[in-house]
Length: 286
Image (cartoon, rainbow, N blue to C red; front, side):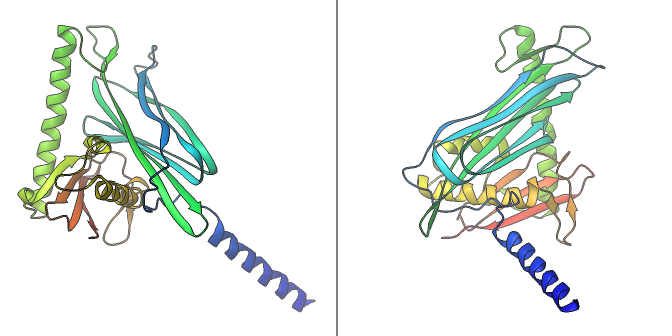
């Protein structure tokens, strides 16, 4: 009887181990060479203000969706929402043997704010022993004016003089906050900014359609894909410190991306909600 129990226990362990090995996991985005003939037929990120306030707060409908032109072994979409230079929320969804993903979330907020969302859409394709991928980015932004002296309003592009003034104020406030934070991070880590191409994460969207300076589009997409792979593991799921502990990224500053001009490596700099300065380093393969 004891022997039968031991065998049953062993089989259970083996079965659990097999499930652990073969179960598709949402904890990883892996860059594979870009498939030249697989594309996203549709991809978008949207931010939309909801009409009613409740308990002094307004709500945003935040959505991210994408559709590949064929089924993929693994489809993954992640999205990050920033407000005034800090991360306020995140979205993630994955499916196997699928081509379309759709996700949305209602986010509550108060006060006038400048929202920016950026999403990474990814598909992993298996053809025999060959593994490739397809990827794209989408983004959206929204200015929300929540003032006791005027009705609740939102806009993407300012149309009135009042909206233009609010847009200037929110842009300036966000830019000054990020500039001050970036200078502090660069000083803390003794980084010479002139040795890098620098941009904030939401601005990465421009390299959807154009290459990095002096690089091919193919190499640019490789760098972007591997950057998002690293961001997902070490920022989106939790900020990994050097001592191995994990911090929530919520409330952290918009990541500053620094790509070395010799394309040997890139850095991601951010400051956590509690003020801890974080540097993530990724080597760039030749």
